[in-house]
Amino acid sequence: MKKLNFLLMYFVAALLLVSCSSDDEDDSTVQPDTERPVVTLNRPTDGEKFEPGDRIHADGNITDNVALSQMRIDVHWAGDGHSHGKTSNRWEYVEDIDISGTSWDFHEHITIPDDAEDGKYHFIVYALDAAGNQSEWVEIDIYIEDDHDHGGGGHGHGPELDLTTPNHDGEMDVHGGDVIEIKGMAKDDDHHLKDIHIELIDTDHGDTVVDDVHIHGIDAHTYNIDETVTIPNVNHGHYTLKIEVENDHDEKITKEFKYDVGH
Image 1: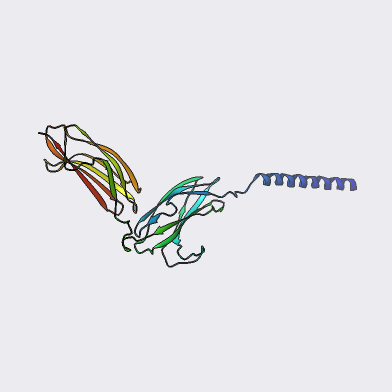
Image 2: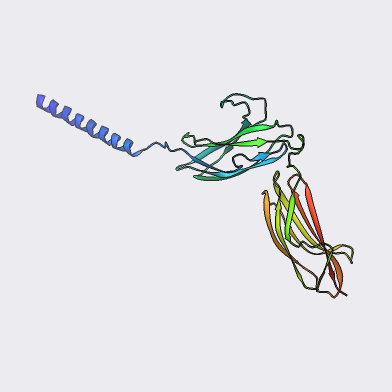
């Protein structure tokens, strides 16, 4: 009887040992997610300058090894040398965005208030994954400067148009069917360019547009122009080439060139 009891106890102990060993093996195969997401910020760039009322175009990419959950954009005044977490009475902006998957491209438009105080601001982006891991902060400095209120300082004068061709004065003689090349650069140091309108206008027939090129949604400080328009295949006529560049503050610059198809 004692021998039987001993064998039963030995058998139960063996079962418990096998069970514990199996649980340990199962637990060892489940590894917790401890890897942080990674944030890449393409725009804005460190040191970029804006004016009150401008739109900041924030874009970049966030990746994670398992699953993304949320991202945050945090913009706040940094002119007092503060440490993070302190409050400020200057412009502040915080946006939380739900994200998913293992890779997320973001493009957000952030409008700076018209009364935002001049100075340095911290622009921060970071993210969380589904396991609660937080990415490293991506932090840059941006600057808000109201050039119009402070006398200009050489900026704030709107878009510019620097053409290599055409560049003539007066009226140029051409032939019907000639192709007119428009090459050069449009730029705006303070705001983003929005649209470029190129029109060839028949001034002999009620300013009718006979050829045109419209470039929309540029969303950049510079744009290389390389376009053409064609003079109608006629024996005579007068035409005006009109090139207009507009920024996202609805400021414009226009240049015009005259052409004469000989009689």
